[in-house]
Image (tube, rainbow, N blue to C red):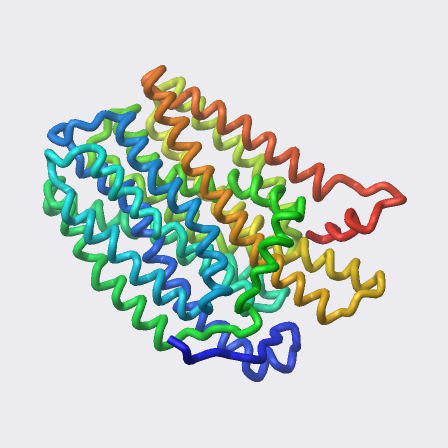
Length: 446
């Protein structure tokens, strides 16, 4: 796969963007979305497969929460090497490879999905499913390099939102199969995805491109891990994306174990929150483009506090309707926050570039560094943020083990969102003193 390399790429040049850049960037965006979409489906397929696992499988609620936590952890860890695979192999080339890798967990799951399979085998196969989580990081890093600053919020939001929709889509397909063929037909779900994976890989090979300017940029990782902003944004992304993916894995199990829903009843509701959260993610990016990512993120975390309080109240009075409404609202807010936080990352480093230029640095080199570093930080934040999904499922597991409900977990989530709102305000929105330093000035307009 040595072809389709683009040597000159300057999206900030308005003339270049109008003549060539927009068309090429949008083409890569759409086929990146397709591959990432299927990656999300495979990553979260165990949130659906556990609904097929009735009493004959011999796995209790705590065991199922741990089972769905495993691919979350593996996917989070894989996001780092996937991020830098784009620089090593090229965005188009790695999209093809990462799509084909999705065949491995899908085929393995089709082999082992039957009563009598040892629990450790399910754990091992679920871990392999984590490869689907890596696709997001490589896709976002790749698309970040294609678009100019003024379009990044929209492009990254659309790319991520289209990928996130892979979660409710596989849940909807699972619902259809449970409703028509029953809980004894999990292999039908897996059979649907094998040809889709092959189609995504072929289209990526035919339609996508590699950027020479991104290749072999190993220095970006070393620089990015030394940036304090890398870790601030990673922390905030735990609150937004970590919540989205964690709840996507756990919501169906919560409905079954706290409210006694059947697999069909749980599946009929589970997909709604991830679907709305995915669809609204580009809106979060667009709002951040217009209003500033930090401002949108701050108010979004406060709204997440309110939504979690609704869930706690609904749990206390055992109201399934109010509980579901609170969770759907929380999913929507995670989607908005996903879009606004990712918009903040390139804006932060472009702000640093402006400060450097004002101090005498060369303009083109400063903006190129901003693009390089923001791409690396997007990957790191995506990896660390995905760990939030692991924490959520482990919190639910412990809560159900000790109290037979999710109440303890809900309170811990509420406290965490309060901390996220405070961090966003203190780092990015707190008024700067009159003698503000250059680094503080770089955050203006983030």
